[in-house]
Length: 79
Image: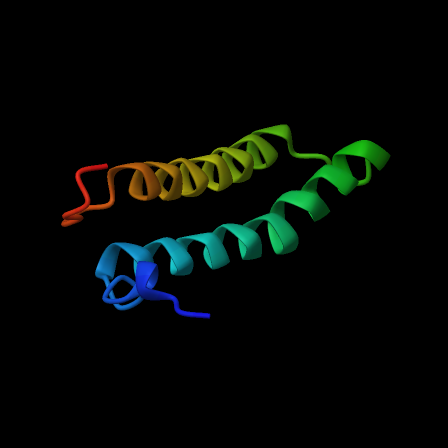
């Protein structure tokens, strides 16, 4: 099976940045947002402002990735 569709794209900066931001968003979600939600749910040491900030950071990272995937800076496909 030939993957000519991906030739020259896998090294593009926008794709690498998207992958890194996706990994960063996953880390923020797994290490910060979910534990903060768990804490808020069980009212241990709930800090709603911190939870909101962390959720906002996660959403911002994902929104940037979505924009990068749609715009594809430097793309010559016309899409």
